Length: 186
Image (cartoon, rainbow, N blue to C red; front, side):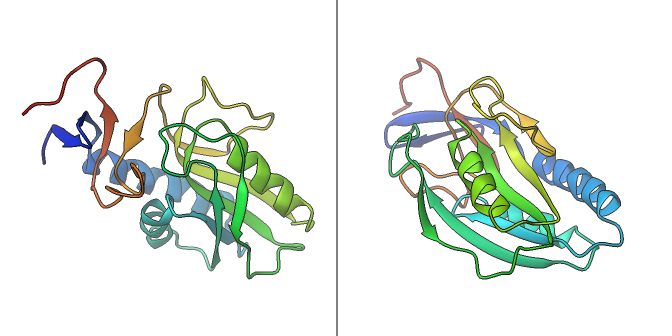
């Protein structure tokens, strides 16, 4: 495992190791297993970023459950949100009367999760909760609590473990953050 990597002439440093991420996912899954005992929730992954977190989380869920995916776009190829959320792939499941658990990789501005909540609540689910691997609490503009948070992080640009940089580096096993004011190593 490398502590520093260079992508597009930007240097990134190791922020959360694969081991730390996996340990926290087991803890989150344990909490969800306890909270939803006796229920059959639908886990809805937000594509593309959540797919790695989603797959690791769902393998630690011991409940009977269903899965579906929704695809939203608010970033494009930029490091910051565009401020507009677009629905690119809708749900294939019946939400009415069901327990819904939305799985996000990161909550940054909060626009995507706010959009998602409004979309799902229109269908009258029995319950709605959110699990996110990362939460940028200091910049998230949401007026509801996030039920399950892996890690609260500062408002920094992070990549890896599903999080992309211009649609690349999602396959890194750890999470890296943009190094502040440091020129890349040559």
